[in-house]
Length: 510
Image: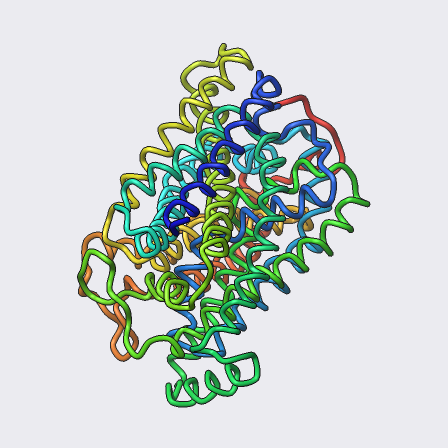
């Protein structure tokens, strides 16, 4: 049986499976609460795998692992370890229990509602809605690009066709089944990812180019030494580690995974499961990428021709590693599973936020819950189409994703995290943190769109420094939240008022 037939058959079975999950859960999404948070009764395994599959997609496997491996050699593995320790273990320890308790007690369904309830600011709510919907689009688009580069190399098909196939699978799960369907799909996709990554690591390590684990580690250590990494390189590496690890703390689609956890016992179990999952998936993914210089002397070009790109390192590694047709089919399903689960999380978060917190509230306040859920499904379709359009732009995966993570985390991480623990943060401090983080994270996006030749002397083009600006924005936002809150309280500003109800009382549904 031909390679193409096996791979297409495997993909076809997967898509049919996703559509069935969506259809079976379509009756459970008749109102907006069911569509966005389900019954708030998710167990540890489902919650942890849903978190992990939303975290890791083809962006990591293809864009980030290949780029970091090419730039930093074996040191690129540190990114995967950081994702497991800081992005999973520490994130769950610090955020999960508090978020679950607060959002359940106050019936909060989205991050804009969280900020509105805590700081009693409609403006902050609308700002959050706009930032979330607009800047989740490039993240969604980067997921498309990550998967299409693999399919174009292994199957030789047009990238646009691949994007359409991915969009159909993601739309089927989200628009038909909503939150409950994505949780069930994520559980299955998480199992697929664990099996697929394990098989991929073994296959790559045993390939002729690597020659086994000991030989491969020795060879890549030698290649890494030849890179002569300097201070600028290590700064770039640590910026990537910090952005992809702590950046998840401010991403609304990741925080949303804590809303539906059943109880604190499941939080504790989920913390362990999520960490082990991340260690295997991210650690394994970046380890594979770190071996890229054993396969190539220069960056490979896209199948259609053009300049060499790090986005095609891992796809060509898979193509040249001598993998069996069945294993290639499994790897593609692994990448599709990772990508569709991430797309589903992004799409639900962006679309439900726009519908609940803007369209219903500002335009159609009398819209009932069933019609709100239907409107959200329509917006999901619009979001998928917009993501497809952006994915066809000529922007590397790593840059596109870093723009999104930088803006979102720079804007939301500090005011959200601080609000969970410190009653002293006030509206003035939160606004300062949001706006400050947004502004500091913006230069790479602005330069990409309008000033592509702008550069920092001795460093690089600003458009390529997304991780650096993302880390700076998170730090600046954190400082501003504390400093401006203190100043506002000392000056007795109106915006320094406290909100004890958020920590002690209960509110009606928003």
